[in-house]
Image 1 (cartoon, one colour):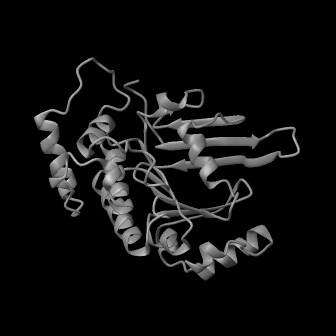
Image 2 (cartoon, rainbow, N blue to C red):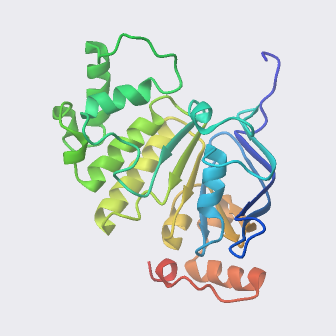
Length: 272
């Protein structure tokens, strides 16, 4: 609607999700989650195992339906849309560098598929000369020498190279929302730092709205303009701007203990 004023890039209204409802394995994953992101917000998300971080991203992406609530992306209610119909609104990078790309296809073919995501398919398929030039220029910005390897199979790339290509693919269509689900967790520290710096650059240059789940509290503080902490399906802490910049890991641990009434039990997050 031309006259519509889009207030938020993302709005989660009272989201509930329970797995294995009514069984001995019943698990409440999200319990009344409310969240609003403005255009250009880059939110980092932390919390212990089972806090609901990835469940929230999967709910937004439509991997599974929610039990109650509404999900609104860029002013469009997508709550009842299946995963493939939400693809045009979203870009996503997963924890496993092998996910999100077709290993047996070339870099240029993978990028062409990403460029056509959510668009009508025709019988004509092939990577045009103009596309190749465009992809070459984009790959050059990664500074990984991949611009000379357009025809290389993605499966032959290192984990870091692959995540870098996946980031480019996820942002090709300038999605309403970019979801980064522990996308550096499988990488060594040096490569992870490079991919995070690249994430910052892509988000800033394309003015994207992004959500990044991370197990690294330091990274959560360093990156983005807003940080949320989750615990047992709730958002228990939400901080932004200058207040976020001045945080320390010890502040986050103290906040967690204050709000949850217990100690943070994920050594992996504290030690990194």
